[in-house]
Image 1 (cartoon, one colour):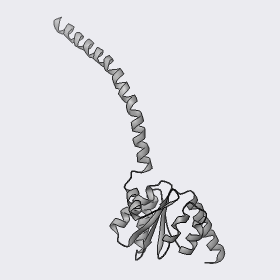
Image 2: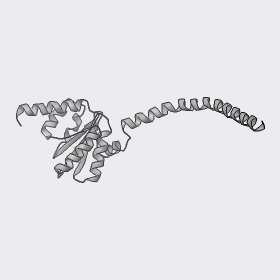
Image 3: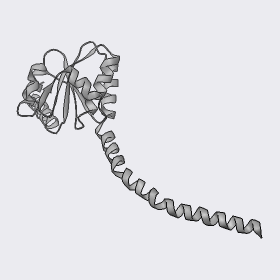
Image 4: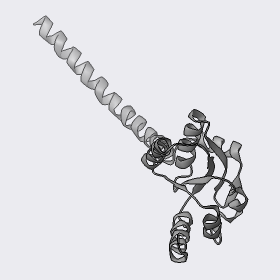
Length: 173
């Protein structure tokens, strides 16, 4: 890789990391190409990215980003998973690491601060941003739905009384 290619890689990584909410740093020793392909597909399906990195280049790319405190994590065969959603990358990588011993989580970064392995695993246990939005929307809609049911109840009761009265009129005739 010549100097211009390295510069393009560093710039691309800086752009990716500048708009990222969460970064998970992993060591991947002994993963086969097929295993990495499966992991990449799962990460992509979750709306995140997974990239095998050269430590020197990623250290240059981290300079000036909120994830600069992660520099010490980049030793050995590293790869990073990152996403805009603070939970997506962590969820997929933790699930894969639980199934495959060849992938080890080293740490990560969230909102500009370094997090350790336990915090990455805790982050992975949280519901996704979309799930939280759905819950919030449900909570906001619940009072309106209850109000609609309460307002419809008297009309429904009047209709049932009228139907019962009409039935009684029909039987007596």
